[in-house]
Image 1 (cartoon, helix red, strand yellow):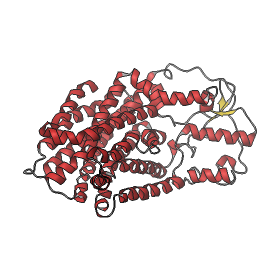
Image 2: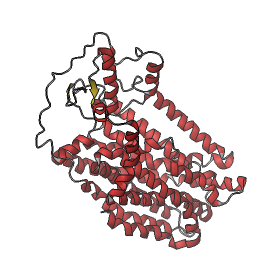
Image 3: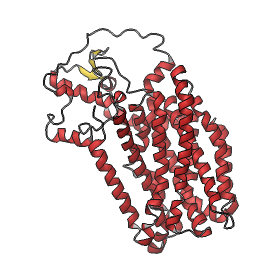
Image 4: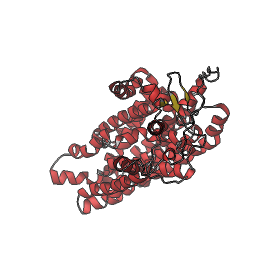
Length: 471
């Protein structure tokens, strides 16, 4: 099995659409292939174990797990599934190399989208001089991007975590989410570093040029090599090919059977409203989304406070100030290391022995992290003085961001376990709310730091007030 799949990437699919299906053929399109449906038998009555909550949850989370061979469904259609347990088109049985390359591309795209949110930050002082706008006006470039996250880049932020569930078994999903989480935090942190030296010396447009070049490279890579990972869509395409080659119009994928009588507009409306309905009807999900918004609001307030602390107080240049954001990468290293160790030695054996278990069990590491995180905020606020070394507030940043990493990983695991059928919708709602709160934080953070001085510890007190409600 090749680790690179041009046929399943957008380039291969466009070639098949524009030229001929004979280009980049699938195994069931090869000469000599014979489709042999399973015997048409009535479905067996589900056993008590199959009706249990634990089994249902496993079935929902491991949505790409192998399904039965083609057989007769209750609706009279023949269900098209995987040809065998080792079907090479099943994302769950891809080789480790193919899974790694595929998910690395998703993480790279996530990094590019998040990097774009902060890459404009070093150019904000230039906006004040060139365009004659105030500080709030110059911050709009960052806040509006955070609010929409590039619009077209938004889907990967909402579905990137769900892609880990497409290709990984449930005990291994935390490993994929950890690397994806590193991309979500490292992107905004490294953006100012990439443009910190070019924007002041040449032109503020260079921050956009750098983003354009990086996103262009990412787009080319994904266009040629990123395959489809959703099992339902893969089987949908297979069913269409088999209907065409065999002439048997009763062949349907499971998703076609379930959604066959649903109007497209009703389906679209359901996908658009589900994230907000679940958030409004479940207080725990609503609180988690607000809590995550507080986390990201404090994080993005750093983009406004760093120039004050490191440029005005400690005399750093714009380029050198951008290197301070490397502390977030260091924090990701400590946070990811501690969380992966916990997954390896506790959660993975626990899952193999006891199943998924209670969703709240996955939040326990976040309890400790949520209590330590305010300490990082207090260290940063209290030690941002010219007579105290710049290293001390930077340590506070590392401490805070390492705790944030652990908390977000716990939340990313908790949400899909609680509502496995609506995992992507919950990620979308969470992304929207945290982006909205972070957008506001960008605008109120600089007046907060300029006018309240030591009272900038207030975000830490808000954090402590909300932490008990989360658990």
